[in-house]
Image (tube, rainbow, N blue to C red; front, top):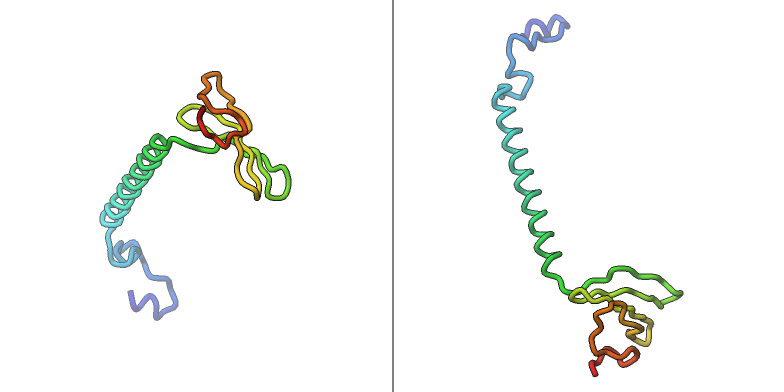
Length: 115
């Protein structure tokens, strides 16, 4: 192969397949690639399970938020399947309305205190 390079010709890579892959055969490279793909799949499955567990264990989440101007928002907050309309500003957070038919004993404007 050195003579081919010295004569200005490209080396014949078909005669030595390991020269094309940095010393590893095609089978070794395929095995390494397969192993890497299996690790990647296992990692993705773990991430999906972790996200599903976290999402199902949360009792409270903000479903939607609308900005009303500088530092003022109205949001729909869901807690244990109940939806609440809340407003927030620099002065604090205020319960504006209970949106579900199944209403707890909370009076709007009471700061979320139960009656």
